[in-house]
Image 1 (cartoon, rainbow, N blue to C red):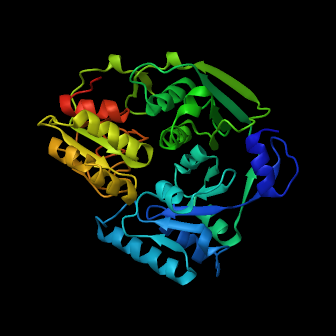
Image 2: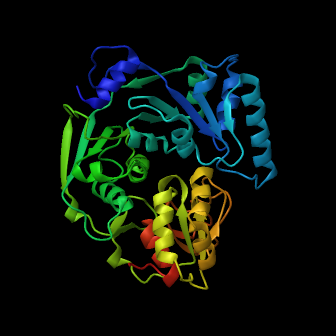
Image 3: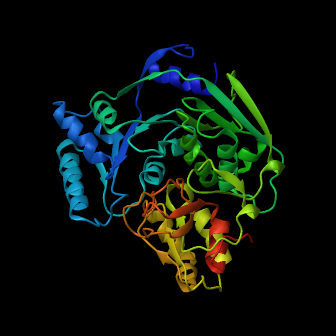
Length: 393
């Protein structure tokens, strides 16, 4: 057994299990948003469901389209609000933030909680020891009714990182390093535990950055271990030295297309995006402000900053971070997803080149198919915004 199997066993009411076993989990939280929520609601109604398993354990946020940029988006909101009122579901529709941050701030899930969601980055919850699963809207409809989710027990791998980090290497660089090493296939459909003395030293916010990006390797579960965990027996173990992690960057058009930043320095940029569910927490905003303080961004560049939640945005105001960013020329938008998914708040036009701290840079992800997106840390993003090109500190 290992720590993930122990939690899966507990949620399934079993004393033991093996890889390949088909089990049914009791769900702790079911989550979605105004992107996938309407599809889940449509499926729920089409299947004739007339109740939810636990209204206090189903959470929906408006984080993709707030305020509504289109009539269709407004109709989505109305549909979700009606459903939430009918079944007494907890709806966060007043700018509270992105679902993954709201879940942590408002509910503080426990280690081992089973969290399922119709979103590609439910894996973020692995940072605080929950067991996260991404599901389809149709699957979420079933879960909202039954409170259960059926899985096949996956193989578990452990990634251990020891040593000391090089200067300038942040949590985002650790995440990109892991993605670059494993790509999209090697860990596909596996449960991934990430630990080691480097991971133990990180704040929860930094661990969330790493866990958030595990889904880009097509892993089925992300879990960040802590000092108290006995990892147990895993199917495969990988060892890495922290001093081998460079200041790196993901190049177009895959998050796993990672290389040292020195190989792409000097590429001109049209837009920089800092924030979202990957790097929109207070520590990321503090790093951004430290670099931007007393400076101006490049006159030909747009800087979009997206706090992950209203609480974080309020702290930014209180600590003077918002003022620094605005005085530098940055635009702070509503807490939530921002332009990451290509809906609004800073889309890219033909042949635009952007650098973002978000998690995906697929072709056309943030706008026109011909635009290009690089992924990097908040420090690199802020410095590059000043220089108008990909730049190190």
